[in-house]
Image (tube, rainbow, N blue to C red; front, side):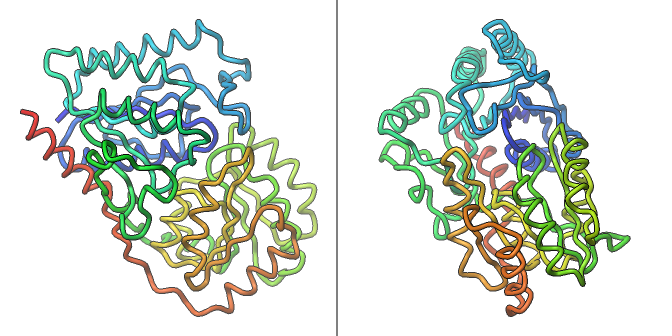
Length: 380
């Protein structure tokens, strides 16, 4: 099969990371895969064996997802958006996918409606239209008004053969965060959770016994890093490793280095071997994005989650609530975050009973491939 995945990450890199995990599953099953990425470059992510096609990149202005900026920080104008749309439509025509997957849309990325709809319309007009699927994580940003639900339902009904929900219905049904109408329910396919295979422990045991602090690949998480440096002064018998993301990582690390003087804190840019480091770590401190939560559940590292809640974001908070009952996991709301509260939370998870590795069904990527093949067979 020829498989196209369209994704635009605007803040962190979680959406692109999950899309690439999905793409690798199709690749490993012998299919030709192109991932069309509309966000900022993220060279630390693995796109081997696939074509990674970049549109003129966009990022959000912080948590303002309606104000989109170019790579140089200028607000994207109509000409810039038109160039993206032209490139995306041409990619659909040239590649002629048999399976087309849109990540998050139409349940999010409303500011990019014009380019997504152009791609979908182009796909349906191909001589042999592809199977069109949506790809969404376990928990969505709940809609602020009924019109957004109706709009998503209309688009799904018009274009989509199915929606891949990357969770297990018995654990996290979509209805936890999004109203599911009868017409939408008929198109939902629960895949299980999408996560890469559990990595082998790091060959050099990097991170052994450390407190590993991360905030994804975007320019976020500075309050977590600052609290971690203060907590390191209280838990000084362990090494702390802070992995800082974003295109401005160098400047952020320089700023944090001043605060970290006299502590056992190591500051580094995000690293591609992060997942290999997790099993060695004494504890993890992070936000509660989908991919990070999957990593923690797979490797059983004690963890403190500080859910991202800027701009009234609630998705990570809902996910944190669902995980807070597990042993050696603490959820610390950002409004309560300080060096002292973080140090206390780490002390508690380190003293808690070890958490056995969870089996929530982490084969969601492979299951997504099976669903796509079945639907393509039905449409033939």
